[in-house]
Length: 420
Image (tube, rainbow, N blue to C red; front, side):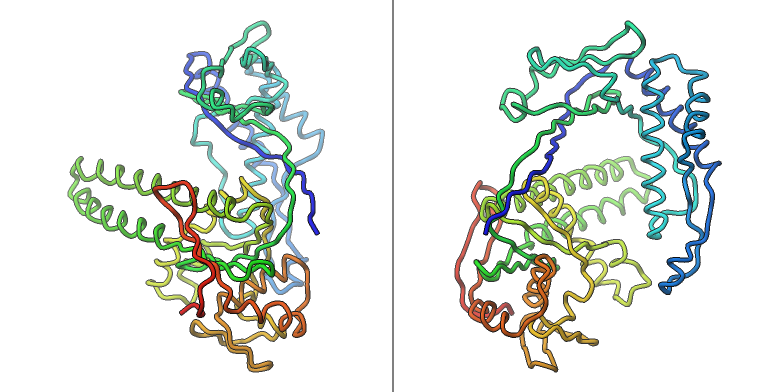
């Protein structure tokens, strides 16, 4: 039975624009933003997390940001002392400062950030919607700097307007840069969900499962090959750069830029062709933390950690999320759990999963994709469901490859034999 999901979709486009007034505004904005972060940092209270301690985690102090109305009024009055612009710019600074501090707090609790004050390094200014007046007929954005002083930005001649990509979209809060303007376009889109696919992310492929399709294999070798080629080129350029030669540094920057551009292109094509091959589908992925997977404290060899770092699952999931509905599930024990009876295997080795309780012998990637599908749907493990639904689809496999030079995806279906 199909479901209807309404979701807000955002597309960000940039247009070249430079003005001395904007550059002066950005300079004031980042200085005021750092001042706001300093004040918030000085008023943080650190308290012990006894709830986490009861769960077995070490007793640590958690930062609590000052959120009282009285503090925010005092912060606003301090920032207004040397404010040459409209008052709403100070409100935009305060909101951005709290957003940065909340992001730092979230990363600090997870162990991905140190106990040090965030620093503003990039030059930007986020404009509030109250400082903007948009003329959709003339396609002009008017930004208020001071009372009765404005800057008009026209996006009528932009390529995304000529191609009709933003027809009927509304504009959100723009981001000002020294040489360009970032414009977010938003609208609500309706997605009709007819099927669900659970995906297991592996080193060489994405393995999916759906009761209506069977098992799906998406080849990631073109992406990994590109990474390996440019890693070798960058290692050679790094040797030249170690001799303090300008040529080596330029080559290193050139190869890094080319690697990022080509890999992003492949990731985007994988996402586009998957959405085209499987329309009206909700995709389920594991909520993976790649930083924890490649840390030295894990019991993984240096060679395995290097191989894991080559695959950018997060970028692929992000590209699919821009074009379809994505649901992320907890990756705990998806590989070690038997998809038929739910028994958890403590020591899992090799490519084949063997259940000592029910005797299931299955490829571990297929087994994990079934578990992800069950987590998405909220179904328990059932032998009857597995024998009735999954067993007839064991050898029904769909192989999908990315056409790097074309538009349509390459599909070979069905192929006999299990994955070796």
